[in-house]
Image (tube, rainbow, N blue to C red; front, side, top):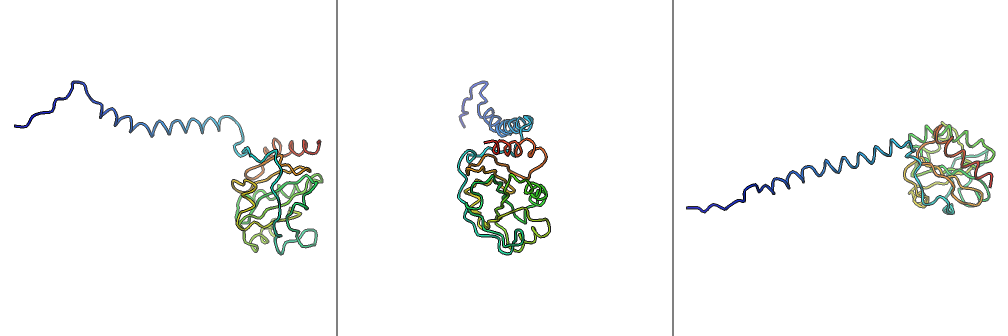
Length: 201
């Protein structure tokens, strides 16, 4: 004869624990969804990612040129500190394989016409032939291009993903950063005010 194990009346602890564990992923998901929605609903441009580099000296530039590229009929210079020294400079990180970079190129071409601004490029993890084809098809807005085949310089600049742009003032300080392609809103609310402020210094 088998003895029965007594069970306290109303005891359902194992069942309750299973319910708690089953509901836990739903609670976590709901919390993350609420945070994500609050960011979207805030009206803040999530591509304007704060950078620890803003307000600090720009990383050193010492990249070889994009061989075969030209600027004003001469061989494209390498991207070095000397190229941007004492100038208000927009440093644009781009690649031929980057679709948003293609969409952004007409805007960078227009920005290069601004006499207050020097526009240079970091060609990121690209093939030379493809980069030259990109510039030949879409136009070259850059007065200097540095080649960054392994992305080492991009790491120094804190690149999240391309295209990215950094405004460096005449003293060599990063004063603005844009993640993703420029559009009308980011120009009006971000870059142009930053340029005006830098020029007024």
